Amino acid sequence: MITGLLGGCGTQEVPIPYGTLDASTDYALTANVEQAQVPLFAEKLCAAVADVTENSSISTDTLKAACVYDIDGCNVLYSYQANERLSPASLTKIMTALLVLENCQNLDEIITIGDVTIREEGAQNFGFKEGDRITVRDLLYVTLVYSANDGALALAQHVGGTVEDFAEMMNQKAAELGATHTHFVNPHGLTNEEHYTCAYDLYLIFLAATKQPEFLKIIQTEKYSFSYISMANGEVTKDISTTNQYFLKGYEAPDAVTVVGGKTGSTAAAGKCIILYLKSLSGHPYIAVVMGADSFDTLYHSMTQLCNETID
Image (tube, rainbow, N blue to C red; front, side, top):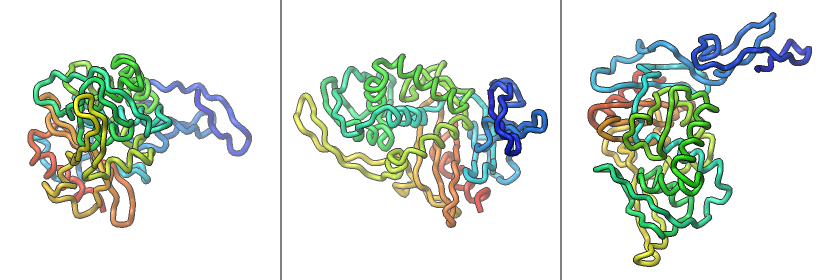
């Protein structure tokens, strides 16, 4: 049921159910019901059903999806295969962090690491062992900045109890946000056929996460130093660096915007992925996504070209 304002005459319950297959509610901004303008789900969101590619000349032959969204204006500046079901790799960790921030009142709480064994070959791990002790805050940095899969697993176990229960929380939150092309089975994004999302859904999830001040602070971090208690060695101090090559000057950033922060992801199944929170020189915010690039060169060069061509 959606409540609509009737020109100053109070409210009226209007039966317009939100349905994932119903074009009238999937992406529509408003609907007129008996002369009442009814705010719908996407009223304050960017929404595009079809591709919007006329504002850029980037080659899409070597990537699977790309989008640029004007947050305040609710405009889609570019959209290529935004609803294509794809493996998100470590962009998954955005949802993991969002749930942690929503469910953990004390980020300085010290938690004990459980079994966080990761078996996928080549996966990025910090190297936590069962019994290690660390604060939730530091674990968020390890998960988002360094993109440690064992860090994401530890956070999921802390908040959800089990990976399965946490994945259920992830899917419930995705549904809340309108991310209807998404299904998560783990907190880190390592390869699983039942673990998928799309570029548009990632925009929805990332937008929600950027409303959390701590999340915004973390994704702007280039380097981070912290201490934790190792079961084997006692107190250990570690330094980590971001996986975002724009911050490490591995690739030249777009001219048209400031890269505030973001999240990267990479697996054999997902290819190279990145999502960025950007601001124009006037301070106007944007979100840009590139998924499934065939190389890091393609990923960063496509993102830079996309931003330069679509953002004023």
